[in-house]
Image (cartoon, rainbow, N blue to C red; front, side, top):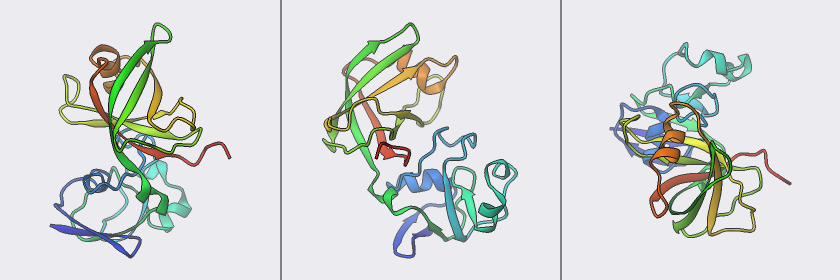
Length: 201
């Protein structure tokens, strides 16, 4: 058992051994990760001030010299083995996990589907134009564990009871294959968000 202290005031006790990204997700602290934790996007950066080892080769391409000196790490690459102290943007504490129902799947082109996700719990969301969500793909033939992928919301901010996303089919893509070949209207799906500071002001 280990303890993660975030921003010097919030403490989370959890079982060690997993990545910092998935460990935080387990206590409902959601760090953005466009690649779903594969170390190929560099989005899941956090400042780790105590309780972590040396920089890993998989982190180096994504960190500037300034970030390395400022104790910034990729949360999807480092494992939680000891008590840790981290710093993350305060707005991430307002990110929520949503349960939703797929009320419509619409073919926009031969390889793009539009999903309408009607919120169940919580039943409303405030999302700015330009922000994104992380859609959870459950276990199925291409993955033995749930994975997340990032999708921009295409619904207007005035709509608060549902989120629409556009999903283009990527050959052998874990999430896109699930959406295009397995997901059905009426299914219940999970996502978290909103994320992103590149939004309309």
